[in-house]
Image (cartoon, rainbow, N blue to C red):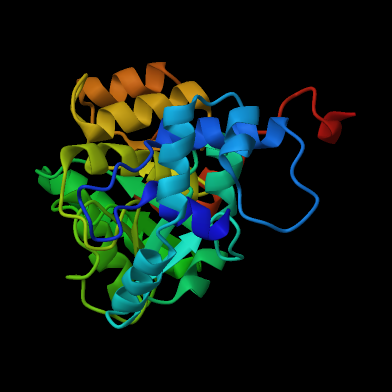
Length: 297
């Protein structure tokens, strides 16, 4: 299934390919785990998919997608010439926290540009609005600087505003950055200390759906997620952060700017932090110790 994730979920340069949606990929993974796999090493057949409960039409569609090996080879080779490579769940550098926290919802395949060993380092995530108030921009930049100071990779979405302010702060302090992009990976410059990740084909253009879905990955990659600025009830930062709080993916540390959004996020479980408190970023990221924990027994 390692090349299978790419064959089933990537357009491979052909926008007309009827690839599987993330939900369909999750369902296929679930069904494959529930049936006995063939003992001999061979290609899957229509009978195998029928045994998983798929009808004839869907079984043939899956087989057709999996048969595009030549297209896959050509697409991967074209991407590698542009420093873009696939990263599937079976690869050693696949981010473990994403797989652990999202489970079956974790992307079957990323494409990346840069040094994949950056994915093996401790990370902290940052999200925020594109149009920042001055104090919120200071918070984002300082978050990036503190990430670098404490040997953590800064994970962001590479968007205007909070993302880029944090990235610049991190890189200027000698740190490393992971940018989960919502536009074409091919067009990103190969830069030292930056790893670009894409949830879809490396040549896929920007889309609002991609911008929305990549927020889940950003929230699940870091040991904690910093929120520099948010708008109450609307926008990708709001939807991603409130889902994080519902799902308990990572601790949420929200800038204490007095906004209605920050107060509501605190009510939902976020921790409000000031600009000066970022100086103790590792301490802010520590899990709280329960009174009933072993430490008190």
